[in-house]
Length: 174
Image 1 (tube, one colour):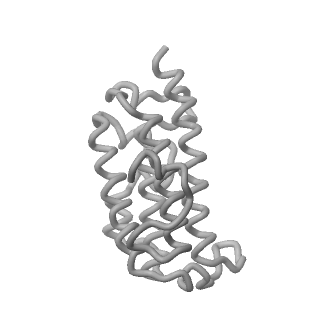
Image 2: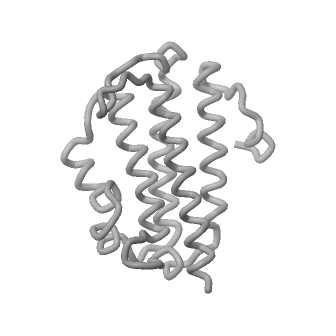
């Protein structure tokens, strides 16, 4: 993705038109998340502001874990399997477990996990057409949702945690 194309929501080679627009948005959001963590060391990534907050590292893995969950739901019509749950243990639900388990990694570790997950998302989105975005299922609260909404949710989820990351970064550097 070129820096110039980050601000143009539009066609992306290899994707149908609407999926390309979704990919454009995913690219922009990820670019801003990566900018928010650029240059952080392990101490800053492990910083926990208080007993209820999560570290930047945990938030990064949580972003990736949520995307894995939506990959399973939208691309494979299933919940996470036992191996996936074990792999993402601590990152799926933030809190005490993530504060205990997700520590001591340098930034490339987190970036690699994010990149690997996103590569899988892009591969699968490239196999779908615009009609797939309209496929509907029932969400956990009984509400009908389509795949477009689910991936919109992934975007909003990352944006929310990116805000937390920016807030934590200012406090970790004091």
